[in-house]
Image (tube, rainbow, N blue to C red; front, side, top):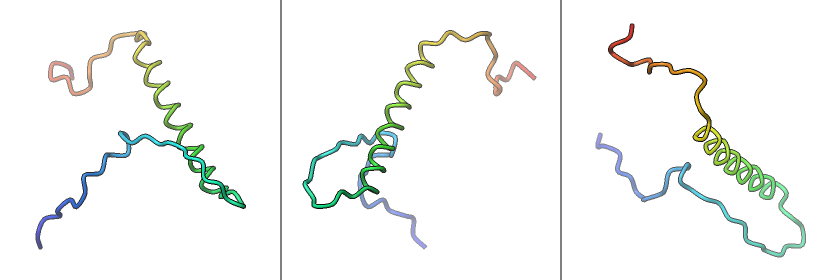
Length: 71
């Protein structure tokens, strides 16, 4: 068997951004609306959580678990 060859240059999920564009329909697609709302909320929550964690001062210093000097 040959190796898998990537067919497209798609961005990883973490690097994707979502946008909303209005399309008039007789009846709203509630499943799509709910999915977009959930994705936007998760994206915003992740960004704000990362900003809070970056600004937070650690309570104590702990060496990394893979530190060769520690057992």
